[in-house]
Picture 1 (tube, rainbow, N blue to C red):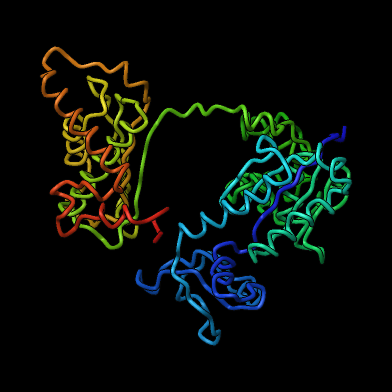
Picture 2 (picture 1 turned 90 degrees about the horizontal axis):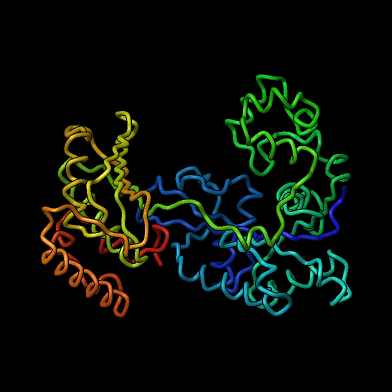
Length: 419
C-alpha cells in the first residue's frame, strides 16, 4: 500500500568543493576545483571535486596523483569549520519553512525532510516545494543542490541517488509502483542505499543481479544467507519502508562506548606509536569525564603499514570501573606491549572504552588509594574546565610536546582535516 506521506532527501552537490567555489565567487558547475591538502603528499585523498571535474571523469575521493595531468584546476585546502558553518546556514533556511522535528540531518551535506504537512500550507506540489528550498540555498549560499522525493524515506533516498541524476531538473520522484517500473532492473545493485559490494557478491551466488531478483527470490533462502537483515533487503526490493521521521527522532542508540582512531601521517616505529597511544588514552579519559561516564572495558587497535602484518585487536576487562588515566593507561600499555610487534611499522591506531555507565556508579578495589583518586579527579576536571574555556591546546601534558606526538596538531583539526 502506498504511503500517504511525502519525504524529501536534499543533497548539496560536491558540497566541500561548492563551498570553496562560493568563497571565491566562482560557479561550481563550471569551475575545476579540488579540495585536498597538498602538504600531505601526492597520495592524499581529494575530499571533493567540483561537478565540472566529475564531468571530465575525475572521481570523488580519488588520490591527488590520479587526476589527469592535462586538466587545469584549482586546489583548495580543506576548511572543515567553514563547511560546518555553511551547513548550519542551510539548516537555518530549512527552519524558515518547517519544524526541526520534521528534519533529520543525515550528513553534513544531506538531509531528510517530512514535508507532508507543509505542502498544503504553502500550496505547492512536492517538486515546487523542493525547488523553493533548493533555489533559496542557491541564491543565498551559492550552493547547488539536488532532491529526491518519495512516499517513504527509502524511496526519497533512492530518488536522490539514482533517479535525480537522469532528469534535467535534478529532482527525482518515486512511489512504490514507479520504483518497480523504473528501477527493478537497474544495475549495478550497489547503486542502491544499503547494498554494499560484499552483499552484491553474496547475491550473485544465487544469480540475483537486480532488485526484481531479490523481490522474487525465496525468502527463506535470503534469511538463511543474511539473517535478520534479509527483512530490510526484501522490503527495499519492493520499495517498502516502515520507518517514519518520528521513529528517527525517538531512536535511542544502544551503543555504550567511546572510541577514537587516527591514521598516522607516516609510518611510526613501536616506540613512536606508543607516544600516540598514550595521547589517545589520556584524551579518551577526558572525553569519558566530559560525558560523565566510566568504563570497565578497554580496546586497542593497531594497523600496520601497507598490510605488512595482521592488525591487532586487543581487549581487557579491568577489575575497576573508572575514567581516570592513571588507572587506565597501565592497562592500555600492557595490551600494547603484549600484542604489538616491535619491528613492524605502524600506520593506524584506535582506542576504545566499552560498556560505559554513569560515573556515579564508579567502583574501585580495596587496594585503591582513594585520596590519590580524589586528587586525580580534581586535576582532570580542572584541565577540562580550562580546555572548555580556552581550547583543547590550553593544557597539554609534557608527553604531548615530544617530537613524534600528534595531539597538539590534531586538536586544531576537525574530522582529521584543517579547520
